[in-house]
Length: 105
Ligand code: FES
Picture 1: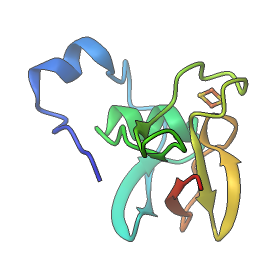
Picture 2: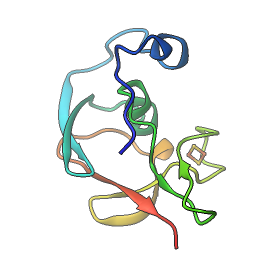
Picture 3: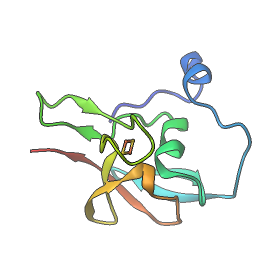
């Protein structure tokens, strides 16, 4: 799992939360607990936390992550609660979500 520290200077340039929007709830990302604001867009919430690697694509297994953030590119596909093929940019954070990176065959 690629993770950039939320304290890495590049994060303030790339992704930052303008205001804390909601109480944080626990979810897991590849088995690791992360606390995200409930109701926030899942892809955006993960990016702000430094989780940028959502899986590997079919071409040479290259890492992929959200690109369009509007449901068109499918680069944000993950498994949510065991259901594969879910677009993180079309999902909202809820307590207890189990998110897993997906690797395309
Ligand atoms: S980021 Fe493009 S479909 Fe989700």
